[in-house]
Length: 288
Ligand code: AMP
Image (cartoon, rainbow, N blue to C red):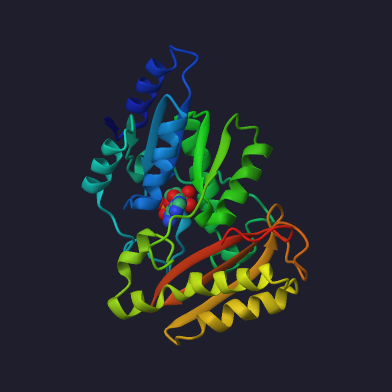
């Protein structure tokens, strides 16, 4: 496995790879502190491509001034080891000056889709995401890029960006990997103290309970949200930022569940912000 820290080094490797025009290159962008959720996406990329490239970059522009950029967990040694074990070909670990060589005057922004859900509470967050993902796409030049359903709004925005900006890249969405008690794996889970970790499974339990009611025929969205909220509020350590049900393409709020949708939530436990979501299909059961 090759570890690259500069754009020039990666580009030199890419030139060698692309001497064979039939090579299929899969790319998985991450912020590191890799866990089994990330591992599942690397494995998917490994199974479906000739070459697998993983990037590890904690992107400062997607964190607000009062957010946890400095506290975001990092462990480069473990990440490199895991990537190697899973058969990654190239890991890119650029520093901030490599990715942002000049004062940022150019921002990629997907309007409307970036304003709701997490975007409402984290202004500028998705502009940071779409800008860095565009830069990484330009650098890596993959055929397929892998994203987790865990960040459902992010992947919806990226899909839209790829279509509008004509990136010749297929976006592959992979399911959320969970702890045995249902908590979605996240790099931020390490920041939960023992008592916070104990209540964290209520997030998925709430979403799952709502999904069960939908299976039983519930279609009224405010009632669906109430079901999830009641479960999450079983602990006052868990503070709900939002629970919303929106259509999956335009992220428009729904009153009645009459089309494929997401039920998405963000909560704080102590001062750790966690997100989760499930896909809902009114015609079938949900995928919870
Ligand atoms: P991050 O490093 O947290 O920015 O995540 C990098 C990618 O991994 C994103 O596409 C996430 O959606 C995905 N991811 C994070 N956690 C999980 C999980 N528990 N299951 C599946 N994918 C995940």
